[in-house]
Amino acid sequence: MSIVENGLPVMVIEKEKRIGGNSLKAWAGYNGCCTTTQSDQGVKDSVVLFAADTAFSAFKTHNVPANQLQVRLAADSGPGHSWLQSYGIKLPVLSQNGGHSAARTHRPKKGGAGSYITQSLHRKLKKNDLCQIINQAEVVDLKTDYSGKVTGVVYVKDGQRQEVNCLAVVLASGGFAGAVARQGSKSILAKYRPDLVDLPTSNPSSATGDMMLVAEKIGAELMDMEYVQVHPTGFIHPDNPEEKELVLATEALRGHGALLLNQTGRRFVNEIWHRDWVSEAEKTQRGSIYLIMNSGVAKDTQVPFVKQYSALGLLKHFGSGSEFCKFYDIPYSNFCETLAVYNEAAKRGYCDSGKNRFPNAPFFPEDKYVVGIVTPLLHYVMGGVRINKDAEVLRKKDHSAIPGLFGAGETTGGVHRKNRLAGNSLVDCVVYGRVAGNSAARYAKRNRSMM
Image 1 (spheres, helix red, strand yellow):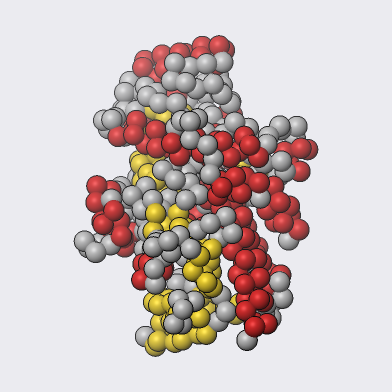
Image 2: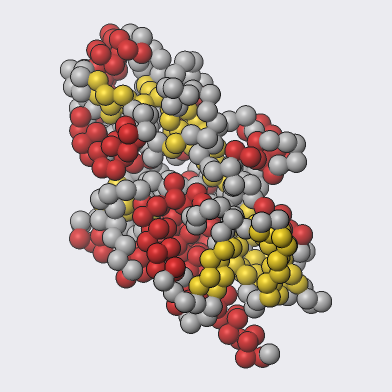
């Protein structure tokens, strides 16, 4: 979008039948600080605070300051929010998700944030004469000249190799946590994290990291490839418990107060901790893990989450806590005791697990409950091609920019480091998508005038 805003033609080569990839599945929302939505709702936030939260999520220490990429992510998040609004994309609902110091995760009133943003921009692009979209095509090579400058791409569609000459290329092809990545010892996932190959995933099977390897072939550096995020809540479908490509139970559910219980009816973790900590806690539990929502949580998240997940058969509705416990063979006395302890913590404003926010508390056994069974699953890869703050892809040998090559989103590394903060995927796509597009446009205009 940023390239056509600069008045230049662009060709989008898409591997799948439709544009969007993982972004279509992003439910939690768009993280942004100092936005008009925050201001209207009296939320105090800052670039410094957002960048610090992003850095802390990565290393769990305040001794590692935010890097240049993280600072730009935070600084451009508010302008990115305004940019989305300029295209009629409204995100009026705010949540404070795990790891955040303020309510800054924006989402629409209806539907998932990722599909809403992606499809809205896609509709705009399809109507723009400067944009050509080629679906079900796979880029297999980058063309370069004698100096190493990128001059085009080679792609395959319907079994036929095609070459395109161009002035700049932007890599925005996602990560490698897809289902196909688990097949075979040659996958990127098996190379960098063989311990994770048997986990289910939230990714489509097309997310195999192809462009990372294509860029590496021409000298690009890959960084942080071993850092793969395991999300704590993927829904297990009761009719197909062995399915490997699962639907994600969005962070917003726990952000609004949903609890995690084990098979004995006990809480075992601060539900709004960082994703990696919650996932590790889940791995120590025996039996199933239940995500439970009382009537307050269910009301807050009814549209779009509870309604959508229920339609997919991923949630069960119970008239009381006793019905829920009886159905799943959970000790009711333990369940009641767990809720009583939790309610006392909510009164104090602090729990021994470290939890200090208790939305939609108290929880009463007699209330209605909406419940899903969840499990850790592959979700996001923090590693990828190294970029600078202008989204230029950097060489491995000397960290100089590869002329004509830019990157954005999950294809790149360095923004999130060891662990991505909840909700930082869509803002990464918007912020660095715009940066990459504008950088590529400036580069193309400069080189076009020299030809």
